[in-house]
Length: 445
Image (cartoon, rainbow, N blue to C red):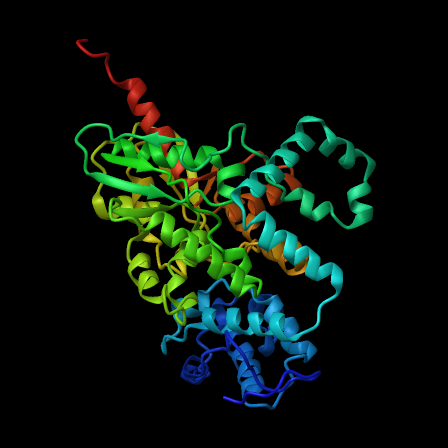
């Protein structure tokens, strides 16, 4: 692989986090990826397909294209990294490794405006790098809501004039009580089957804390002690996807140290993007002399909540929920982790729940971490496509397993004036168990 000194108009990749040459060469350009790629299906441009992007990466690696080339940078940004191409690829190309490495190279070698560098520093290193800072920012967002400032800014139209109306539409509502690692524990109900650690994360612990508690209750109901270890933090997915590999490595090391204890039978994750990121810590830390082996062992114990429950089996029967539902496959669960059957099996275990499949369930909704903040046009097109497909099912409830998907689809439904609800898979399963408990006769009755 060509490796040149960093100069304006850099040719070739250099330094750490170069796209793996063996992965680049493993693509045979067969085109199987084209029909499953969201951006290709929207544009029908070759360059906006996985095959086209690999050609661009190869051209930079071979010194035929500058890393500063606008088309190269645009396509690395436009890619959702949804990994649908990986799931269909007959050659097993690890496309995600290529795109994330290419983005890391752009961040390393391309000069950025001071404002952009400052925003990245604040966002990735400070807010996501420290759980305390994350909670402080979340408290500010909650105050913004409670003070009615959200309604004020909406009524004045100021956000639209600032170009922030789209960001506000997908802004999560903060939980009443955050999930603070180390402060809550759920003992097993009935015969104890083991102990698991729950990843708190950043957005999940502040905006989706009740999803965490629902997940813990479901696990406890099925015989597992659930612990939220105090030493842990953001999974690093948003940083890595944005080319900030060093920040991702710092967060990965912290989570391996905090969640990797031998007392845990598994590390449970209930956000698809977080789970995919953690299961790839071995690649992220592959050159770390201290953590490479630790990461390889650690990722073997990481399980999505639905994956884990399907493996160990339900010992408690959920109660009845009379609802017509459809399930939306989160990309990083379906494509990166290859988990599609398990969530559906759990939903089918709920009496009364009618599961209706939507068209293109596994086509990206356009959320993709913070993609919908910076690629608004493509994210909006994919959101509309997803909402249309969901509404065609006439479902009362849309179920997913990723916070970004839930926020994206909710925003799309609200824009259409629809009252269809969107909920996390674990929230639905927890409600079914609550129905079961309320139907049980009192002790001695």
